[in-house]
Image (cartoon, rainbow, N blue to C red; front, top):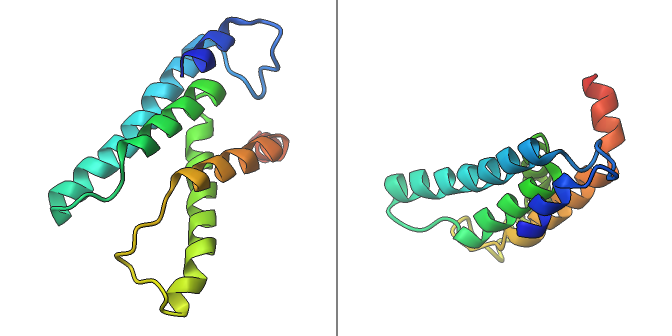
Length: 126
């Protein structure tokens, strides 16, 4: 997280991928807050843990590296990959809906997809 924030002060970095320090700081806080809120509300409604804080820390680090704008895309891509990997075992009934699925690897895959498709994303948005 610290390295992701410190790198945002380097003016020679590609600003389309790596944000300035304000967007980096907001991204880190936003990434942690989103997962923390999911954990909080799931625990409140279901009375059991749904995720660990490791996922929040990882998304926070990704937010520090790639800024707040990356967080929704990383979450969407990682959720789709988690669904893609989990759906076949749910269909085969080798796992059920209460089976724990490690989400950290899917966050990393979602981040890689975001980095590879960042030009297409910004072209579509602008």
